[in-house]
Length: 454
Image 1: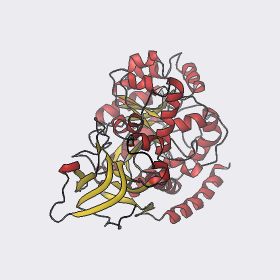
Image 2: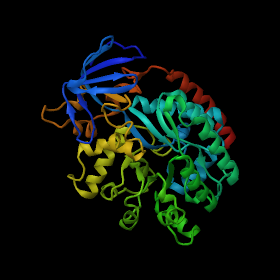
Image 3: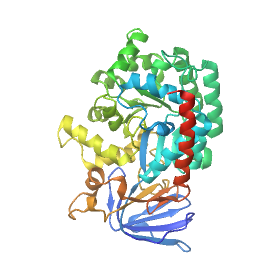
């Protein structure tokens, strides 16, 4: 697949490729594929896409175009911890490694950790992430997202209580809320709306009743979504019941009105039919993280049942400290294969699986009108896959959704556009020096480990 390198800033572009998977509600496939982009948005797809006067034509033979991939749960601030928390279940993983490491973050270490995680995401075709953030270093993380080129929903990770929580992470409730409000006022809508702010209490075990009550009020007042971890491991849920008078996560959230907000639950491995009956019709979504769930021994989320209850499901790599990569295509494939194991091979097809990282994943973030499919009016976030890769070679009758969901790897990602601006071309970052990011991260990792005394 060859094409001359385009100008990075393009006002009017007609992109021509072999196939376009629109991932619209009808899962329309356009071949030959044509997409007209103007001013950072998609103007037309298919036959209606014609070269305007003064526009540029870019032909990519062998190109297979898909919407930019959406990850609904990531910890880019943990990229610097890759390989440092192996062989532990969730609560030990947090208490023995992750919390001491996060408490040692500063804005500089958080910035370069996030920049490397964002680079890995872009190179793998991810254009949008929902980032749950950090406590110390939260401002550095958010600044890195602004500089990265990614689209993001992100905020500060909020904690004001909890057994074995380091002092560096435990904040006074008033101060925690004051800080997240200040960050939200500064970063919500940054860079032309590419960054949206969210309220991110870590989970019930590190949040007081007062924190949850006031976060619900703040979410209603500001219109900011809530993003938290819930029902990830049985040990976690048992600890929640012991702390909250026998109530599990869903019962606790309901008693505090949290289920009436726009809420995304990361993991949801142990959601039951009883839970789902209560959740139906709410503005609630689930971020499914299959690799992290397997790595930490958490279990397999029943996303067939969750989707049947009417809740949109997205996928996320979680973090490099529990995955250990940030490859969205890997999560798509694994999500589908695990449901086949649980429900049979007919349970989920390629179009449905790919939708978890595109159209449905965008709805899980409350952004279905903006991203997730290649349709007129939406942001020009797209990925060009190299259809000549050996893993994508197939008969003409093969469904291209199946090829992408079950065969494509991040090695097939050639070009990545976010908001009409090329961020990756021919497998290389255009606006960031990857070697410099790795070098700076290494320097700050050494200092962070000294501060953490691990």
